[in-house]
Image (cartoon, rainbow, N blue to C red; front, side, top):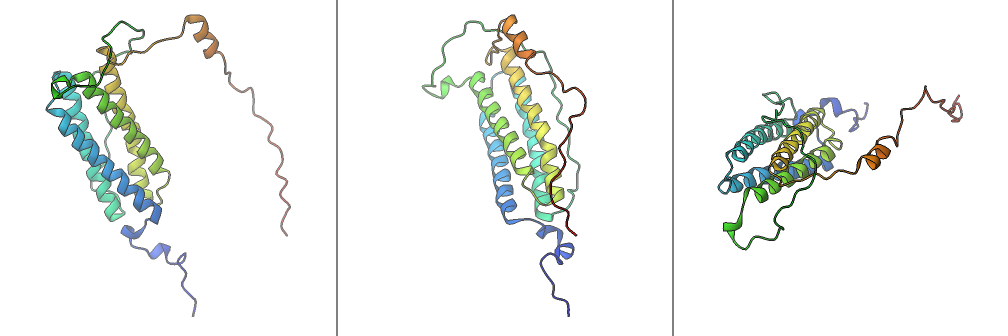
Length: 210
């Protein structure tokens, strides 16, 4: 009688068991951190004053909640979720404003009365950027192909969400972007050039196995 090995049983494995041990811990971290983002946005909402920032917060909350549900579903079942992943669209896409103009020095809040949109949007940006990094690092470690694709599809969307918050901050001078002078910038831009032609790869010296 042929002995069954774990490798032989892989194709017979139930979809919801198609996970490596390390992957389980990573997905728990992703889902827990997604909940943290959602809960923090809920807390921030009561302090937002600018209607534009409130619209961004609500839009990103809904998008994050939708993909939390998709991720939780496919993680539990190991199969394609019942709904498709979505693409996040920035509603007010503007060009970045470069340069520095004088602003009031920053300092820690002395009370909740000091909470302003500048600080709230900075917290939002930090959360979304961190989550984009976490999704990227986790998706390359996941063994279940469906879960991997669901996570990977969210990375670009969270990058867009972070960029949307940056643009909001930039328009309001909360996040200013200095530039190098023209000469230094030109030198930096010309540091790299495309490769010419196809490089000649050396032969592989591995001995032939007969």
